[in-house]
Image (cartoon, rainbow, N blue to C red; front, side, top):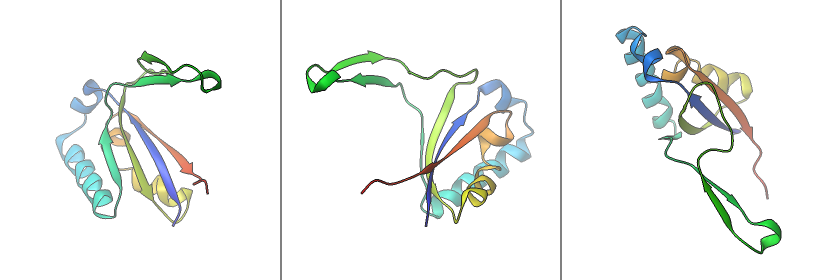
Length: 110
């Protein structure tokens, strides 16, 4: 079954202004995805890694990408197709609490 990487963006203000019943239902959806085998986690502090021509590892604290909303977390889910993945994440906390969820098809390499 195809896999998808999701990135959830959201902030506390959006979460707090979402009705409790919707937040509760969104957390139920997260639990359902986990029960289906999704790997989910809260975003930690990123580190950028570069190694030009495999000669000198360079690191820099902080994200490479930026967004108006902070990254809240990541998941790897399975769905029959992109439409199915969108349906699954459309009810998770970041999607319903004034955030956004990106869905990236994961094309595994051999």
